[in-house]
Amino acid sequence: MRLLERAYVRYLRNQVIRGQVPQHLGLIMDGNRRWARKAGFADVSVGHRYGADHLESVLGWCYQVGIYEVTAYVASADNLRKRSDHEVNALLGLIETALPRALNQTRSPWSLRLAGQISALPVSTAGALERCVEATRERPCRVTLGIGYDPRSDMLEAFKNALARLAATGRSPAEIAETLTVTDITESAADQLGTDIDYVLRTSGERRISGFFPWQSTRANIYFTRTYWPGLRESDFLRAIKGYSQRTH
Figure 1 (cartoon, rainbow, N blue to C red):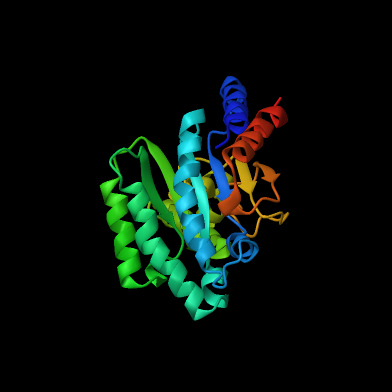
Figure 2 (cartoon, rainbow, N blue to C red):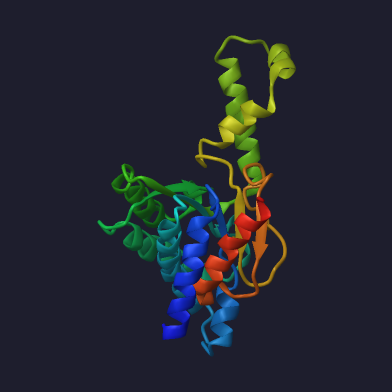
């Protein structure tokens, strides 16, 4: 990093630390393939490798400014269904190796949680992720990875869990229908995410949420940047977080 850029990053970081930061940051890590094309790679799946490696850096930036809960969209269920076998296999290989390797480091403060259809992943991929969840369970910060995530399935599961909890109290179906509240659903949805997401950062210039945890991000502010995910610089990140403080005042 050049001297001027380092000075600018220090300035921005101090501004962010003195302001208000999100309690729970959502990351839609978009633009990996477009970044790879722009960088001249013939195999666009290379972008996913750079993107996976970049998550470790961004989590470090979060920790430095006091953001201790992050949810990152790694791959939606549609991503895994619609892309080529080659690209999906490359992505799953990264999920299986690069992400656990980054989080398993002893110096990392991040504990891993998973959201999505993990049972639909290959056994080796699901096993690597679940072992990482166990190995990092006691760490103070929390990163949830949305892998094979489908918002409608997620909401259906939250409703089922809420109904099962109420049925366990001995209430009849009619009583459950009468007494079911938003809080019941929110508590069930929070089984995957610790708290509601209050700020979402999406890279690549796309101005949509793409089904990113719709129940948990209902009240979230959203920041869109044209920068592709692997090319997101610390200064870009800090400007985005500074924007949160400006929006909440």
